[in-house]
Length: 453
Image (cartoon, rainbow, N blue to C red; front, side):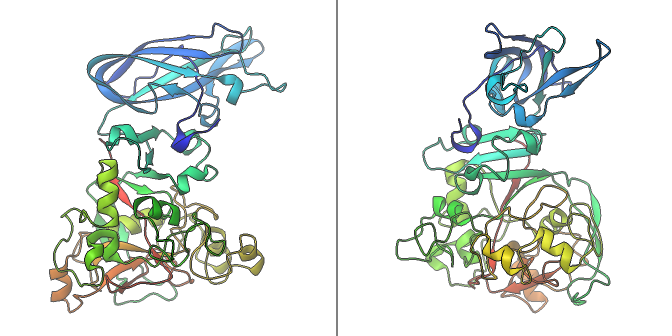
């Protein structure tokens, strides 16, 4: 059974532990399964709490009747573990944790029965990992519904890889409505090349290559923000189209899992009360205005969500690939783009499959992810970023471009958006601009937040 945002009914156990860091550390792991093939209970002791705790389960590899090693059963079989796991646990000093898991619900033999963790030939052991708060796991799922306490500890669950995320990143409808799934990007100290040299359609005025060094790891949304997520924070009026050109379920059959679009930068970050103004104050690092979409999201979650900078966006879009490549490592061609993007030349059959016959926005996560597990970085809607538009950013080393710098360069009334729906605009290096008060059918956004607690 599934409940919201990856909190599932289940349990399991452990006989082995993995120490992720010298401090904090897990010891005294014990696993028991009193009823045959029934619920398993794992207990452990965490030293130097607090920490984020995750679980893996391994089974022995048997050759000629001998155990020759251990291998993970796969995160997709452990999704229903609950208790002191997938979250921050403990407050200080030592903490005694308990995890339960039901293998009969998720790890079954060929007859449909749950495996026994201490079988005659095949056995299982648990690996309990403690993550220090400055190095939280690769995936974070944040509950954005109204009722949960307004704290990060209450709303966030953490998973070491995509296959551990309950219900599947793309299959669980909660992740396109009630929750935001975030992927950690290891960027601290990484130097890379931003821009392009010879890609077809490049704008030599604003895509000049330059070396960039990023200074912090960050989480970024696996998906673009959807209409359903936008509505959770700022409900769409029953009359229509405040958050998006494609309003929520109940209006013309449009789905809430489509990328939100037609939202101004000002509403996202500045203030809806002055949505059509050209703001000169409130630039990052000033937090989003409390009366903006992001401000309301941060109040509800106790977190620090924001838009990515240009450099953060392009680094995540490239996913380790450079000039002339899409984020999955393939060459920039019309055929390859159709694998990873909803764009102008997707086939009519592909569009008809979901009833999305327009060129503006579609269900997030329909196409293949890039190499870092991020969806729709190419295609679907273009995405707002933090920066004011300045063509030549070669001397900025990836730093945020503020209003003063953009004005000095003669471009003081435009904000940057990235990505797009053509072979030219879907490239990682592509950038253009629009007024921060501008509405566009093809412009939406995704969010970032700092990595760690």
